Image (cartoon, rainbow, N blue to C red; front, side):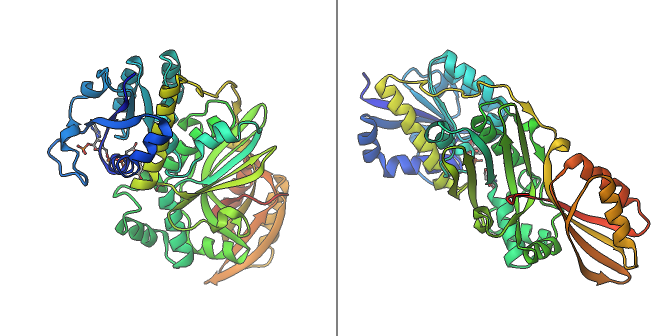
Length: 430
Ligand code: NDP
Ligand code: HSE
């Protein structure tokens, strides 16, 4: 048996750098834990001349075959991003009987099934803990520690950029554009923040979590998505006055037959554990039939937090190689559940409407809601602007289709200037 387990890494950016640092600073303990030394053998990059934060120049290559076709390499770590290229390289790694560790949610949320099948065919491991919520352990806990439970729901703040922006809007009284600019200046938001602020990054992550929690394959296009670009400081202020905070959540709920999977802003009671997760932090709230409520909290991105998850996966793959047990935990999507359309989902809603400040206006709006079986829990009149009054309504739980029917009629009423915001309320019963 080779005295070392050799790693080939695809990519040496933020996360690759973190992996090099963690393997080097904790290497001797890792060797004790695995029973064999883990050695970084080769690293694929695009530009071999680029200055790197750590000196790995002797390991760099631009030829993927140096890793994928190298019989010495046992584990391939994919931290380069992309969908098509990473997919091709990982399949080649599996064909050559190498275990694969990735942090690539874009890839797993689309091609998870094919990747699992290829890993199983070749009798090797496929791990992706870093793909959801960076350093927070959530994939292995769902697959192992909580696997005796029937999971009822998974709900999480799984995008740090949007949580940072919403925190800045709430604590700093900023409007969305200003908060986004601050997040970009501080390096939380990408120069092109679309995937974060439109909810797409969170949608990929909740697709991965929902597949594991409900044992049924859910891919990125199955997720209903709304981002946070329409949230105003008024909504945040009114939500807080009503005892709620505004958060962007990934939500998955399931039964034996069906699953609903969505990403959108929510009002969540300020007493809910997720309401106190601020700035760039992530948290995932899981409800199982045996464990009850449990929450996982920490840093959802960044060099070292994500490297923590990636190195944990490397160690798991290495232990399986050492013990002759690769492929011990493969794909757990053994069911084929129906995915609920958003129109069938039941939620409570917060609705902000600008109306003419005249007698009878509220009665006409309430009448339309009543005709569509939308029951109102509270109605509050907020600020006045000219001859317009702003009204905030909270509904009881209602089927989304009924709410949308009512809103379509309300938008056409002559006394209604604008339906400003429609935000679902989560985390409170009735
Ligand atoms: P970076 O852009 O910082 O690094 C990407 C690295 O991959 C670079 O070293 C680049 O080479 C190399 N690379 C990219 N494309 C190719 C290619 N076609 N051929 C060869 N090398 C290539 O990305 P990150 O480290 O930030 O992210 C890596 C992965 O981790 C992504 O999938 C991301 O979604 C995921 N992730 C990132 C998190 C974060 O906080 N950044 C958190 C959780 C997951 P070169 O250096 O020469 O340009
Ligand atoms: N852009 C992501 C976030 C981190 O803001 O949480 C990478 O998944």
